[in-house]
Structure formats: structure tokens, C-alpha cells
Length: 402
Image 1 (cartoon, rainbow, N blue to C red):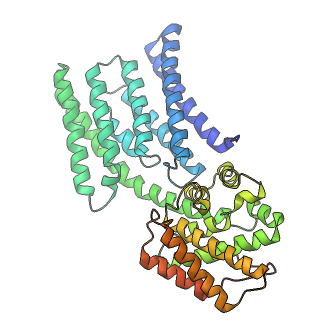
Image 2: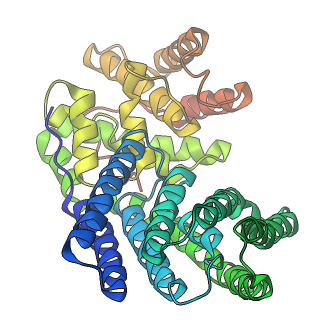
Image 3: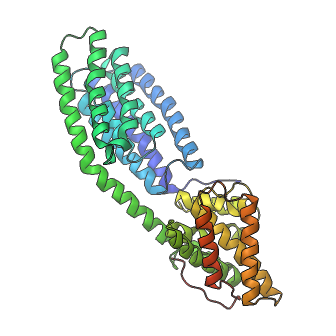
């Protein structure tokens, strides 16, 4: 199945490539390198970037870059660009003073640990090669990067902030001093003073921007759900134009899933979006799951919505979240009741019994074992579905799932 990369994601990937090459050319210019040296430097970029872009794509496919869709890649490019600008400043500072831990710390605001470490290593490698620095300095930066990446969320959380800052601060000062000693560098006091200054600035900037950025990411995630279940959204209209019955089913699934998620304290907007687009692939034809996931990826759906589509009916993967389990439960009950309606057998008593029987059989099969849905939450959802009287016919207009 052919997969087209969305233009927005392609732009952000290109931005990472351009930023990296620009940084290398700047270092080459300052060192007055010859063409063959510049070519070797750029080949190093190409090799590293090829591995990096593969890692980004692999993390995307495995749903390890969060839920913010295309905005996630824009933030990665933006944070990476800021770190590269800082690396230019470090080019003029004394050896062993580059705040490598700050690169990993800030990149973790936009990416996961694997990506932040990879990008930080690339920056420090380019800097060390440009300055002709020893293996001792690169080793010091590698340790700082690992610590910075691990401490990112620890420093942000209030409960662990003090310990996170203590660990980050002690390693940021001790590691460069230790490798500075091993390398035989004499100006150790200067290194200590520079690192202390960089550390203070790093922590101050992190606390100044982290809360705002995390808040913006949460806001963007909510907006991303609202965007795709808006009546004017193209795929929303495509489902409506494809089939009235399919549209009514999608509307009912989204609305009821939202209520169920609210009942147990799950993410109601995620459940609403997942419920509405659960059978998205039918507008393209078989294979339904693959086509639904492809359409969602082309439109840069939030990754957790795509995950729900991938777990459709538990055919390829079992539901891995409470929201996915809710959507599955709602869809299964709706399909059974649709069948009753088509056979003119629907009644309040029949519908209640169908819901109980359907959900009890599904629960006994173990299909929700990996979703994190507790038995108490399962029972709450089941009772809500019974109370909700979710039966309808194809003349039902439904309500907006958002």
C-alpha cells in the first residue's frame, strides 16, 4: 500500500536537514576549510541525517512521538534550530563548556528521549569536529546528553523537581571537570565558571518555557480533536456523502463514546473522534483498517486517534487504551442493534439484552485486557449504554460527536 508523506511533515524534515547543513557550513567557514574538508564534513551530515530521519519515521510508525500530529514535527525542528544557534555561541566559548545537557533537556519538550539524544549527539559531534576537540570532551558531552534527557520530565514535575535539579546540576559540573582533568587541561576554574553560568541559564530558561510549551501542546492536542470532528472538516463531509447509514452510525458512535468516556474520566474528545472515524476505511474499500489508517495519517490525525483506528474490532491489535476499548464497545453494540432494526426485532427489552450479552461475551474473551479498563469502569460503561437507548434507524440525524 502506497503511503504519501504529508507536505507539512516533509517541510519539517527538510527544515532539520537545512539547519544541520547550515550549521556545518558555518563551522566550515570559520575554520576556513578547503573544499575536500567541507565535502567530508557534509558526508558526515548526510550519514547521520539518514539515520536520524529513519529514526523519526520509525518512531512515528510506532506511535512514539505523542499525539499532536504534524505540530510535533514543527516543534522538533524549532527546538533543534534553537539548539543549533546555541551551538554557534558555544563555538566561541572555552572547551568543555558546551551545555550539552541543555540540548537534550529542551529537545525532550518536543520529542521523545531517543530523538532528543540523537539530535543532541549530532550537534555536539559537529561542534567537536569543528573545534578539533579531543575524545575526552565528546565523552563528557555524551554523559551530559544522557543525563539531560533522563532528567527532563523529572525536573518539570513539582514532586521531583528538587532532586532532578540536584542531579542535573551535579553531573553538569562534575563530568566536564573530570574529563577536563583527564585531558590535562589547565584552565579548570574557567571551565567551572562557564559551566555554572550555562547551568543557571539552562534551568531558568527551562522553567520559563517548559510550562508554557507543555500547556500549548495540551491545548493543540484538544484543538486537533475538535478540528477533525468539525462538520466542515473534509473527511467528516466525505463520510456524510458516502452513505447516510454510515454517517448516522459514525455520529451515534462518536456521541455515545464521548458520554462513556466522560462517565469514567477518560479522554472524551479522543473517544468522540475515535468513535466517529472508527470505520473510516469503508469509504475507500478493502482493506478497511489499512485504508482508514492511511487516510488518517495523510490528514495528520492525532496519533492516539490513529492508534484507535489501527485497533479496529481487535482484528490486528487489541485495544490498548480505555478510549479504544470504549469505542470498540460502542461500535459492537451499535452493529448488533442495527441488525435487530433491519430485522424488525428491536424493542427496549431486546436492546438491553443484546447490550448485556454482547459486552459480557467481549469482556470474557479478554479483548480489553490490554486497555487498562477496570471492571468497575467496564460496568459503568455497560450501564450507560443500556440507559442511553442507543437504538436508532437510518432516519436518525444524530448529534455532533464533538
